[in-house]
Length: 382
Image (cartoon, one colour):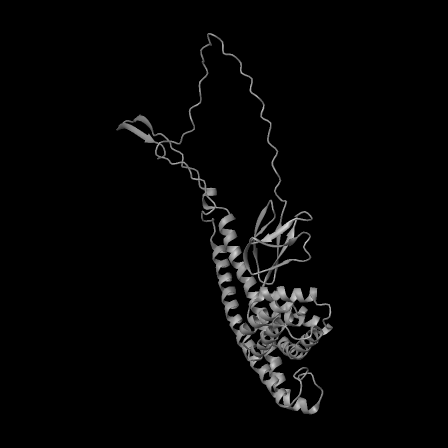
């Protein structure tokens, strides 16, 4: 996730680290004493908070996952989603964000906004599959994992790449693209109606059939020494290879651009994370909350944090710009390669318009004579 959201996530972590144990304490007081499960959940949760503050997002994800397994608390679920996103588990993060928005009835408007923004950001790294044509009440699975029953409330979040979408009676293969929605259409193929073949009526041959005086046409064989033209196949070269080469060049440029600007984005993100961490630590040293530091109107706060906040904003803007250019480069790459492949496969082939074999003429020999000489004249085309 981007750093502008990480500050909100840190505030949420601080809020949960103080309020959740208190919630656990009230539940334990109602029961008379903390049970072992609650104690273990609180310990794992505190570990997750510490790992998150240190930037160890993978360790934080595992700790929050253990805490949520022990105690299904919505605040833990939101922190689990954020740490999953920060540790590049985008599909898991999308699942937890959606679960939080669906199940948390006591979430504040700010928490809901954070969850919605987090879900939108991780979906920029995922593909989505929309199921069409399947009847109501049909079980849908993706890569042999059931995802729901039609009608599905929304498109299915998946990792980019090839996937197999199935119903109990049909299977559709799709390729998910980053940040885009792909359609999986069912019911397109209909069973063919078998054709009715009439029964042939056999006429008995006469006892003494008349002689066949009709002359059968000679078979349509090519002249000796000539080979019949071979029908071009799908992989035969097209008449013009220019569009193929152009598409490959455009696709290569798009690929290079995607790689370069993805590296620029990662560098800007790393710098933004470092600045955000410095702002948070400085705020803690001054005994103030890191929430809203960069938007504060306090003169002293602006003096202390103005330069750092400007640097953070510049880095976040670079992250956005580089991400946009990288995505555009991916689109250019796809258009270039698809154009090259499509032209090579479906453009007119070289053999489609092969010139007919040259006509063969027999030589003609004609005698001639004159006052002084005589002989033979040979004419014809060879």
